[in-house]
Length: 110
Image 1: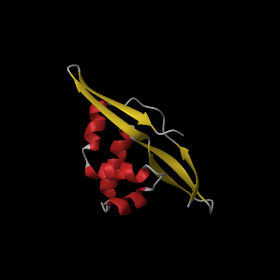
Image 2: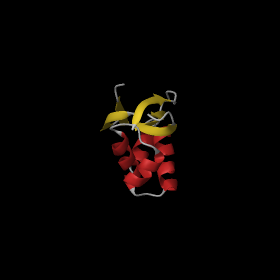
Image 3: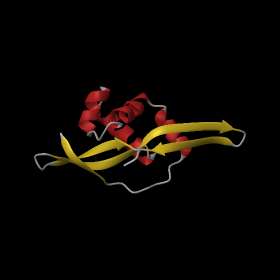
Image 4: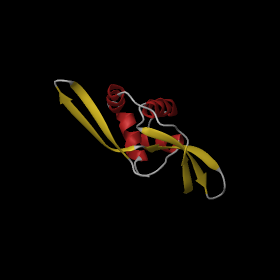
């Protein structure tokens, strides 16, 4: 099991419509749920989502670009390390009014 995770991504300003598009995909939503309780590797996510590794990597990239997922290095007790992914949000609010659609995200504390 992991002993430490270190974030490797920089801050970005995501496009709200792109975030909604990403969330329209069932596999992407399963990845967010799976990574909401801690970092998971692509291999772990492939198993959990029962998807192909190519599909999981595409969804990971979409989630990273939309700032809904972050990449980190997970250090194992044996001294090895691997790339893992963790959800960056715990709440998403969509507001629709005459001026358009507004997406606001509550970031995970940490």
